[in-house]
Image (cartoon, rainbow, N blue to C red; front, top):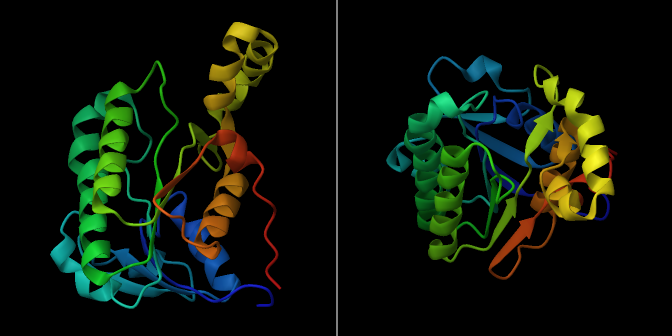
Length: 225
């Protein structure tokens, strides 16, 4: 793996929409990956990663397994977010982030990578509030952190917003709408995995580094050699 050092990475949400691809990419690039899974979900984890059985909402169930990790990647979240799932954003998204932060602090992890959401935004206020509160908890923890803020990630089973692309293009032509259109722009699965890998492989920031949509889109493609 010329030009980069292998990392010991602990991931929550490693069998999910973003996590499964990220696990595959990290393993292919020579990193040692441990991923938190629920009992019975071990087979859903991509090959090459080590499964850690635990509950993402309870730090005590996986805290010891985090020790020795360079990087903690927090990806747990409610599938297919919608306004009807407001309570779950607090009970799952926020609570799992708090548990992950607690475990990372206890284990002395040197870098915490968190997928948040673009903000401010006119929609999904409960979802944004949960992610904002998680960012605040991460900041208070004093962990070196990289926070990625996509709005919507296009990928398998998540393609319907592609119909909105003409509206995005039009909005970017109108000065009063341009900034919001760019902040709430769409990214795809490849962009996100590349940006996450770049965060894992990069030097931990001093404090918190926020990666917005335009930077996520610029993430280079992955070389697995």
